[in-house]
Structure formats: structure tokens, C-alpha cells
Image 1 (cartoon, rainbow, N blue to C red):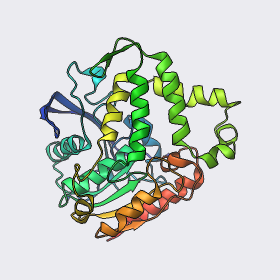
Image 2 (tube, rainbow, N blue to C red; image 1 turned 180 degrees about the horizontal axis):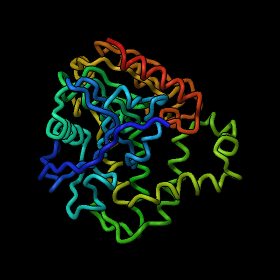
Image 3 (cartoon, helix red, strand yellow; image 1 turned 90 degrees about the horizontal axis):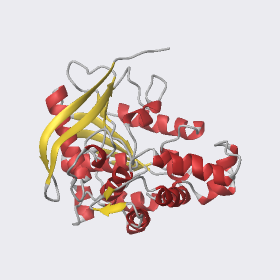
Image 4 (cartoon, rainbow, N blue to C red; image 1 turned 45 degrees about the vertical axis):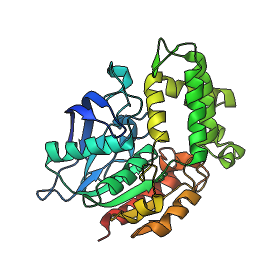
Length: 335
């Protein structure tokens, strides 16, 4: 089995001023790296985390035969604020109304410069909320990144996507355990039961369920077991306050910050690979198709899959993994 260097650390940023006002006190980014930084620091791939995910959840695609090769690239995974490892409601007494992708990428930029001496990234690769951060990197720091890979993400969270997010927010805030200001007195078990079921209806496509893949591919004996095991229990591992904070971060995603989205897209200098899932209900192919004409250097390569949003994080799906590996490797090696 091939081994490669790995490291992990905590990067303390002090009191971090936030994009929408206020401060995140004593902000800390927990990070994990794979591979070796080249002497000229030109092989860095930043890999931000996604909704509720922590770095161990995403490391499955790192390996010599994986999507990201640590023998070729120096891969850094910064844990997003709110995920329970970096500063989050669950480990901080003072949490603001919203911490945006702008705040995450600003902290990540400091991490790369102050810990690794890196001021320019070869690429940012992200799935879902990680893809939103990749897009924000390209918009916020156009001279600091050569290419971004937007895997099941968009430049602005769509209205339809926001309605989904607001349904989850409403479920959590309606729980008897909800105290207000993003806090809970105890684990909201009944609310989480509803939360997981709403999520399951969106994360996988109608075609996925029509093909009964929740039973045949994921090994559930029946629908109820699938919903409980794969969704309710999965999300119940995370504190409800952290889940709520991430919903607000996701909803706020917008590289134009409420302004002119085509202009924000035109200002991006990085080469952008748009890789939506063909049946994704969150970040639709049509969203990326609308962005494409405004980007200077971009290609659209949809993942041909009925696994919905999960096609972009396809640990149990060899065909989708192979497709993503081929696209990502091609994009990372392009001049």
C-alpha cells in the first residue's frame, strides 16, 4: 500500500472580522494536508469541506489512484467554520448570525500564506458547499488561484435551493429544544427525524429512487431503514446548532454579494471547470449553463448519473468516481 506524508494542525486567526459585520472571536481553522509541498510551492490543491462534513469524511478520494493524487499534489483540507472541528457553535460560546463563504476563504488564504508560505494556488477543488468556496476563491482572489473545479455547486445559491434550505431551517427552529440565536437546549430528536427525511428527498434524484438504488446499491432492507440509517442517524452525529449554522452559510452563497452576478463571473481569471450532476436538484446543470457564457475560461462537463447530488461525492459509485477522476486529472494537468 502506497503511503504519503500527512499532517494536521490548528491555525489560530484571533478575532476574525466578518464579511457581513461582527467578529468571530478566537477563530480557529483545523486543517489536514496530504502529500509534499514542492520547493517552489506550485503544486497546491486546496480542498474545502462541504455541508456538515469534516476532513475524514472527504479523504476517501485522495490516493495515487484516486481523484486527487497526493504523490503529485500537495492537498490541504481546511475544515469549514461551523463543522464542529474549526470554530463552530458547538465549540464557541459566541456565534454570529452568519459566517459566509467569504469569511471561510479569507481565513483559508491566511492559512496558506502564514502556515505554508503559499500565496498562489494551483487549484481549488470542491464539492457542494466546497464548490461554493472554490467559486468564492476565484471571485475574491482572482490573482491567487489558477484553476477551480466546481463540483456540484454554483456561483449564487438559487431561489429554489434557498427554499429547500429554509425548510430545514424552519424544522430546526420549530423544535421545542430551540432557544433562539442558533442554540438548542438539547438534541432535537423529533426535528432531526423530519430533517433527515427532507434531506433524503433532495440529495438523490427521482430516477435514483425509481431504480430502487436505495435498496439495491446502498443495501437497505426497506425505505424506512434507509431513511433512518442513511439520513436521520447520519445527521444526528452533528450538533443541531452546527447544522443550522451551515444552512445559513449555504443560503448566503453568492460571489456577487447581492450585486451583478454576470459582472462577478466576468471578473474571474481562473480556469473554471463546471461539473454539475446531471440529476442534481440543488445545483442544477441549468445554473452552470447560465454562468458559462460570462466566464472567460470555462468548460461545462456534467456528471452523467442518476445519483443526484451524491454523484459529486460518489464513494459507493465506481462509474461516477471514474468520470470525476478523469475530468479532474485533465483539468489539473492543463497548462
